[in-house]
Amino acid sequence: TRGKRLITQETKNEMKTILAEIQSGQFAKEWLDEYNSGQHLMEKLRKENAEHPIEKVGANLRKMMSWLFKKNKKEDVGV
Image (tube, rainbow, N blue to C red; front, side, top):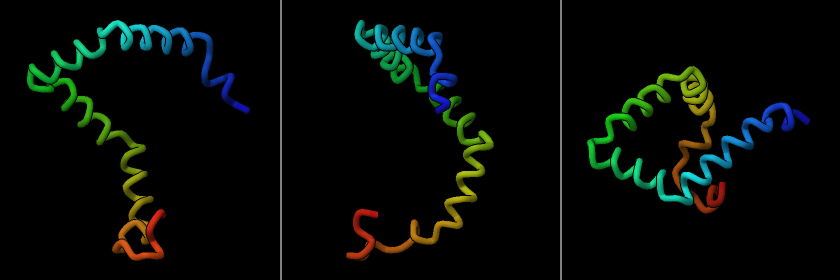
């Protein structure tokens, strides 16, 4: 019920722009340049994302999900 508010025309236009960058090879070139230059931007973004409040909340929630830490048993397969 909130999708139309979240995915606006501006969002759709930006997604089309990103798709065009992928299709043209521009994104791949940028990624290869980043990789070949030592991945400094990628590491910066990883650090920023790891420090985001939602990641801290997620870590706390996962600690409460004991089934995530069980050894793979037959009854746990597919969970």
